[in-house]
Length: 571
Image (tube, rainbow, N blue to C red; front, side, top):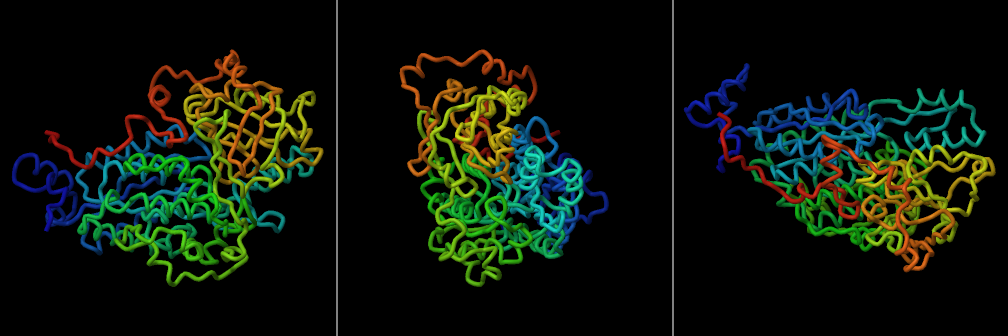
């Protein structure tokens, strides 16, 4: 039998081994330290991350499974990022959470890890950490909440916040009714019940091979989630015995399948930056153009908000991810493996669709070609993305006059000004919201429309931004523009009145200004003054080292893996 990594702490009779064992005894038997895999449960449960607050219960089931398989389970609370509460944006700390988790996994006497996440940045940060430390690792997603209703209508959390708030601004919904909907939206424990970033990353993590097939998308209150957690605890012990590490099964083929899944479920645009970052930790050659090449022509099969009608509880009932992947099986790479050691496609033989209204068949898709499209042009030399399935078809080819905002504060101050020179054909341009500029690339790209246009019945406009948008959002939004304005991108040079040309079919986003004229321009003082200039702490480190969206917005010194070896003793 291969010597366990934890034996480097616990094995032997010297002073250091004594210290390591003695302080960990606290009621456990002596054989806990001899040949039994030590399995950390990296748990992002937190009252301040409400979508993950139930993960302690999930962890308890994982513990039972680890014990049953002969391992020793060890609780390891890790940094938790609550999308709804953390300011200025949870994305600012995704890399910090990944770095902290990586270091704790490496520093401690563990042989494998079960990763518990749910809310948007938690699963990405855990997978980035696991990829960098490369110990046997498996994810248990916390699952979506159940469907709430308001006035007899199902509510999609996130998506209906945007919709209802716009109706208030348009004068078609009272403030009182809007406030009443607040208590109905969050019906149960769990993360967003739309195909937002949380649901997307859980499903993409399964398609990537890091979740036991069939588990992602199980609603948080379901008893079957606890059953799956128990089985996953047992699997973690088996993975240690087989030395099945992320680096041994996460390949370019795995990311190919993740991109196909992302497109087929109509997933969040945020998955692009997260998958790029995870690939960067593994040394997998994944680039922005792969998302267009692999995924842009994939049909959207899931009729789920924000691109469709239904919610995650319906998706689970209708057959879940495996039913979707069975429909696009010919587009998957059959060689990609999962945490079970078997190919992902092996799990698709018995995966029927139980409700074809929720999960469409390949012959009757929701959108024939709805995957994420990658745009380039003189406005985005290094790329930008758009989600056609969430956009208005008539705006996918558009030419309009730019109305430019130098910061999110500038936007909020002027967007509802009745004297703002804007019409339905205008293009809203917001800058200073990229990784460096904000800092942290916030979810502000789906800018609310001007009140006076909402009152006229306008419900969508072309919007262009170097930030992100919530996966629960919708609209014709060009986002992740790279380079961002704060990194010298041409978005900083656009002026109100310039014409912006969007052509999704041609994969172009341009400002109709001669190249020599753009070259003569420099950013306005208002634009530059709005950029972040942190003086200390994590924000300073982040701004100095963060990369651009087209490579995943990781820190330059975190690319790659450091492995699991720790060479020096602590005493």
